[in-house]
Image (tube, rainbow, N blue to C red; front, side, top):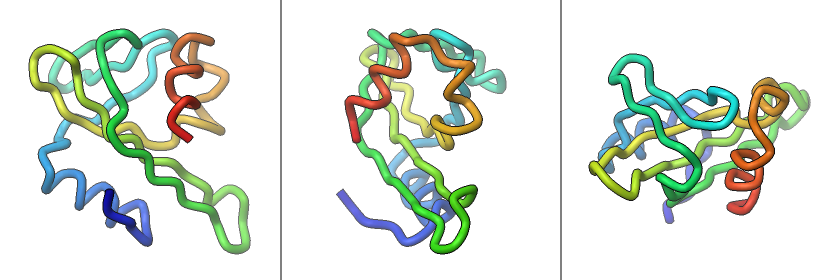
Amino acid sequence: MEAYDTVVEALNGLKQKGYTTNFNIAFDKLICSEKKNVLNPDEFEITEVHRFEGDTNPADEDVVYAIESKKGNIKGVLTGAFGTYAEAASDELLRKLTMHH
């Protein structure tokens, strides 16, 4: 797994590897409104996790997940799954995301 210095580098590097779908959390699943993709926790695997910590400001912390569907060959990214989105995710989805830290 490649190491990246910034979130932008991680997103660009993953895009070059085919992770082109941008996912968001919708309580108990991942969605991509633009492509109309929906993945439940048992339908995807997290293949890479890149964590970034702010040097001076905790608000600068971020995490980038590389996600692949088990069927349908969907590859994409999820960013910032903790902090802002943590309260909007189901326990099952949060467990899946935290297993990869």
